Length: 393
Image 1 (spheres, rainbow, N blue to C red):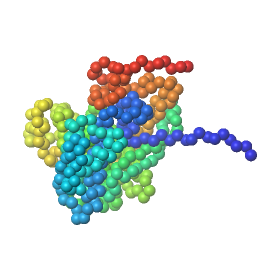
Image 2 (cartoon, rainbow, N blue to C red):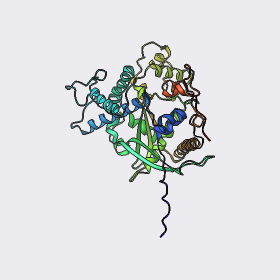
Image 3 (cartoon, rainbow, N blue to C red):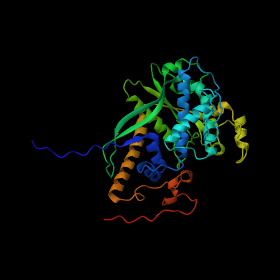
Image 4 (cartoon, rainbow, N blue to C red):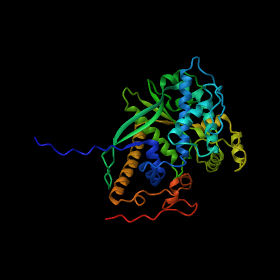
């Protein structure tokens, strides 16, 4: 009986919505070095901050869920000194103790904050996230940090990739119409969701994701984060709908945590958006928030914006319908196709820089370790890019 040659294993590229697809859109060359080469950034600022916020909120929710009677808000907000252990007398639900546990877990993975200021900003926003959003979010959650996964065909293009399919995965919190109906309209998240999903009957789900960023502007050709956020949550809705026993997903919620405690850069961006009317949530002229933003200048103290305005800026609800989901999936299929073409081109050419284009964006370059050998970094100083040896034929 003849025995054939052993077939090569099937390669099924695995992509996450934030770690791969949005990272590639931000800067293809940075994505190649940090994701393709698995080079750990020396200052994983954005990665650490996002995972810290996710970790604090998840641990806080589980403590709230497993404690009887329910813990009331606000929770205590002590904070350990830089890399010092928290006081053992602090309560289990002290956000300082929770944050320290999350920090330790991230540090074991080689992820830490850039400096004291970055850590302070993260804790400040984590405090606000738990105490401002927690009372509205926690009673609605039925599944925290739920993993969702699915596969899709890679779109055709001038260069075929490694395989005709790819795996897509993400993590979300899940709410249901049942939990939404158990709280009154004083719950800000319920109100925001039902303003979008009014008229729906029967059981449905709502998925939630956190963004360690400010609310994006509506139109920004260089940083289309507003549209990318919508694509992300709609793709999450598609993935959630493919899980066993799934019920329809009616909406997705993005929570922009920076809006709860904005920094100087966030206020400056908000003021620019106010001047150009380039945001969907802006204060009405003549209100206290309008005067606060209008009179603010860089270097001045952060203005005290009202809770109502901050919460509106924090909560974004994206309605889910099939046409919008199809558009989002098509956009992500296109990104995967671009990545696969870059991978194939690199394998053929044997070079990296000529196959993966740099972004040249100042904000991205400032936080990127690859800028020192990037062929086209944003203006900052002399490039330290090494001379690339010619590829042997």
